[in-house]
Image 1: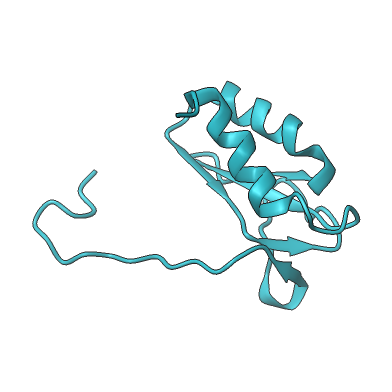
Image 2: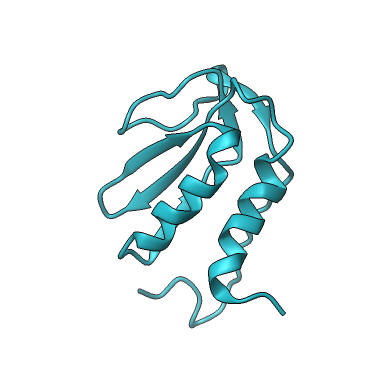
Length: 100
């Protein structure tokens, strides 16, 4: 079983490890709504920076861009050069769902 510190780099490597190095993926955080951009060759650095973040809301974008779009931007449809996988955001209608 992997240790907690190994899961993030393995996850990022699985998503972006074979992507072209000229593309960029991003990590987006709340509450600051900030994007941090990385090359697929920077998976280790991205994982290290994620581990150092003192936030509970950290998201990894699966749309890649041809360039970094800035610290307040994410990838818009018109700028998506590739996607790293298929995903779903499923909300469950339950009394405890989505409570903060």
